[in-house]
Image 1 (tube, rainbow, N blue to C red):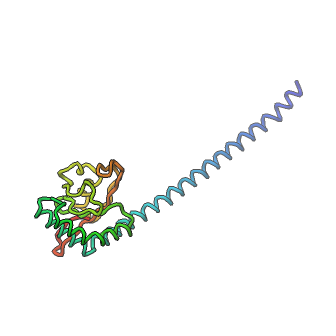
Image 2 (image 1 turned 45 degrees about the horizontal axis):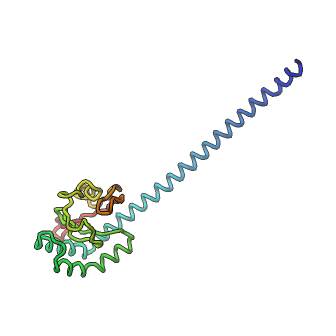
Image 3 (image 1 turned 60 degrees about the vertical axis):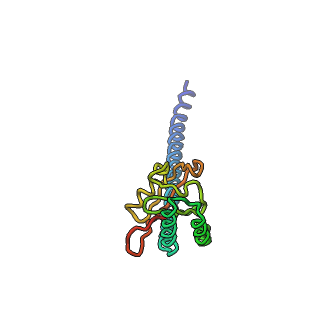
Length: 193
C-alpha cells in the first residue's frame, strides 16, 4: 500500500503538470493559427481592394476615351434608325470601325467583353456580340441579373461594380459587371460602358 501511495503522490502532480503544459501548448498553437489566418485575411482583403480600385481606374479611362462617347452616339443613332436592329449593314460597318480599338482595350485589361449601352438601357454595341446585344436591360430578363443591378446603380454613381451572379447570356456562368456613366460634352448622360 505504501508503494501505491508513493506512486500516486509522484504521478498525480506529474499528470497535472503534463495536462497544464499540453493545454498551454494547444492554446499557443491555436492563437498562432488564428493570427496566421487573420494576416492571410488582411492580405487577401488588401489584394481585392487594390484589384477593384484598378478596375475602377481602368473603367474611368475607358469612360473618358473619346471613342467611347462617339461610339455610344453612333450606335445609339443606328439603333434608333433601325428600331434596335443590330444586324443592319450600317451597324456592321460602324462596328468594324470601332472593333480594333475596343478589342485592344479588352485584351489589355483582360476583360471578357465590353458593351456600350444607351440611356434607355439598350445594349447598342458589344465586342463579343453575344445574345444580349440589342436587348433593353430594364425590359428583358437582364433586369434581374448582375448587369441589371449595375445598370440601376450606375444612375446614382459614376462607376459601379456589381456582384457576381449567374448570367443567362453566358450560359449561367457567374458574371460580375463594372459599369461607368459616359457624359456628353453638354454634361448630360450619353450612355454607359
